[in-house]
Amino acid sequence: MGAPGRGEPARVAEDVAHGGGGTWARVRDAARMLLDEGAPVNALTVVNDVTVRFPDEIYDHHRALGLDYMQFIPCVETDPSDPGRAAPFSVTAEAYGVFLCRIFDRWRADFRDGEPQTSVRFFESLFFGYAGFAPPDCTLCEHCGDYLVVEHNGDVYPCDFFVEPVERLGNLMRAPLAGLFASDRERAAAGGRTGRNAPCPCGSGLKFKRCCGR
Image (cartoon, rainbow, N blue to C red; front, side):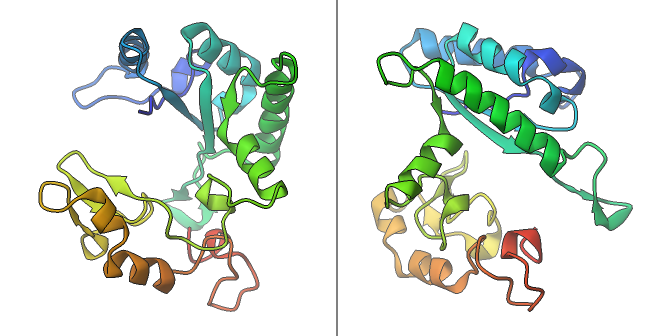
């Protein structure tokens, strides 16, 4: 189970719930409830132009809450007023790189007897690739196809980037997850999509995720 959040040090940038009010305290309390019940929780933290300045505070905050499984993703969205530019709240590549380097230092410093005490998905995925295995992080893979998304109503999609009616594989109330994952439609969807790290088919010379796959 994931607990998305943006970290206490930059609550000025926290999400606003429907009807007003911030969501940070609700996410924190939900994470605590899950941890108290023994459920494993992955803290999915969106890093934007504000939170990118607080790697130590965010890491310490997660550790203090018992959120030892961490995942960080950069907030990069298109500016509605200028589709050729990133939105003002997007994090820059340089700033996000500095953020990850500091998180790496903190993650590495937490090793005990050669064993990590926290899990940072991106770093572990890099090691999987270095060792010759398929990375758990799909953004580091050459092709799509090993990932499913289940919505609140049971609808299943091949990826959180493709939650669209045309991509719907089925519903858990009518078919088992294993069957949907192995379905011809899922294999066709994976094979018919351009991998995020593959060259963009438009011929720009950029990776698909940096071009038409944004």
